[in-house]
Amino acid sequence: MIKALLFDADGVIVRSEMFSHQYTKKFGIPTDAMTPFFKGIFQSCLIGETNLKEVVEPYLQKWKWHGTVDEFLNFWFESEHVIDQQVVAAIKTLKNNGVRCFLTTNQEQYRTDYMRHTMGFGELFDGIFSSAEVRNKKPEPDYYEFVIQVLQAQHGIEKNAIIYIDHTVPNIEGATAVGIKSYLYTEFDAFKQYLSEQHLHV
Image (tube, rainbow, N blue to C red):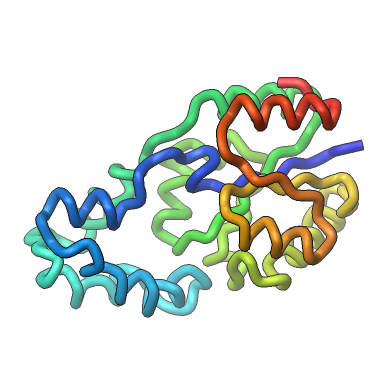
């Protein structure tokens, strides 16, 4: 019997275009101008080793941003504040039917806080496993093992009673490798059908 669902954020419940794609089009900079940052030092922000506000500031001038760091982060987070209300409704129904729902997401700390408080995910979900707080990120096995241990210790939920939902193949493979039943998310209707096959009705 399934007792808990683990939801990815971006690509599942958050359905916005990637921020760097939005930004480069809006400000007329090359499409790969932000890649060195996001592929480089930003990765350490995702596991809580560095502070996003400190490491992003040196990049802002070349990105043609003329405001403050805080204004940049607000612009960033608001641009990706696109929540799929069908998924939200499904989560609420699942919870009403006794299924625990958790957010499992690779995020640095400031956007984690934005998701928790401004986007309302702190109230929507039974818990949030942000990579910045876990100190490890998907698809590393230690990330999923940490989630499993917390669900067992704090909620009495065993690994075989969990389904993990993500939109990226590497993350699905990472979860599957540690024995978590996983579902590759593409669109809501197919997901709804999958839940029905698992005897979970939304």
